[in-house]
Image (tube, rainbow, N blue to C red; front, side, top):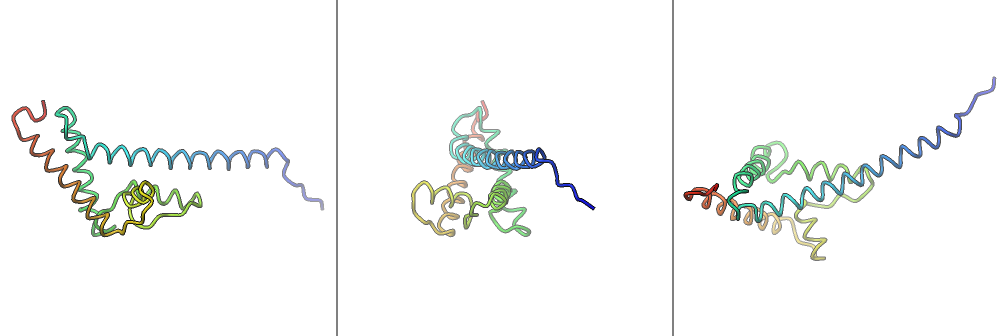
Length: 145
């Protein structure tokens, strides 16, 4: 009995599907980088304008919920976006960095290895200062315009 091999066009479709999946993963990784950077920038400066203060406080609430409420399950400072991005990078065969996204970003931008404890302290401190500024300005008359 003779077995038939799959037609050559299925190999091309499979290769095309693999290439498409790889492209989608690279695009997803790039979009998650953009989302991370957007969140970081908005956390740093979103409180400065009265028109963005409500959205800024909502974002800080989501960040605080992720860091604190999920702490018993995932550890203090857990970020769902980082978790998704690290899993995607692992599937793509890209090294998954040690620590969080802020450490990854600073290490790549500065070319230095910043330890987790120092990076976490900087991240939490800066976030708290931005949160305090946002709350203080929001409580003033006309704080939300």
